[in-house]
Image: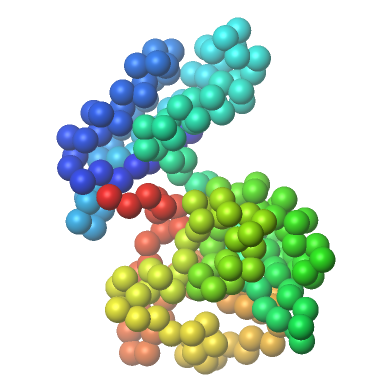
Length: 214
């Protein structure tokens, strides 16, 4: 298990690590890295350590869930090991939404079946979108999505000051976005390699970057 948090100063990690005072059975390693103007603390815990808690909890999974709930209270979040790409568009007056899990095929949902898509979304610790505007279509039924978002346009703007529309980027790449599936796959390309803008390439932060800020 890996958890992470963002710090203003490296020494703040000691305060965050107080969570382990309640979990003496667990061993862990901690690393602190520069992260922009802040610092990133990364903690790794052997999953087999949670087997020591069986008896207090009914299973290793229950123990892990209880620990994470406690760690969240101290400002930690899980390091996402998987993600799904989400995008949406209107077909006439009907909303179509798509979900593309990493290394899988896309699934498309119409406006009558968005709740089925949300059930799939909850399985992933990180949801990747190109721009935030598509999130507004699902915020009412899945407000928690804000806590797991990676917004590509936002990351581009942090580096360049502004970001192009998805269709503008597609023209730079010579890609035709004729369907929702095309858009989902193209968004996947953008996070898989350095991103090409007019005349230059930029490296986006990894999808696993913390959603927390200092």
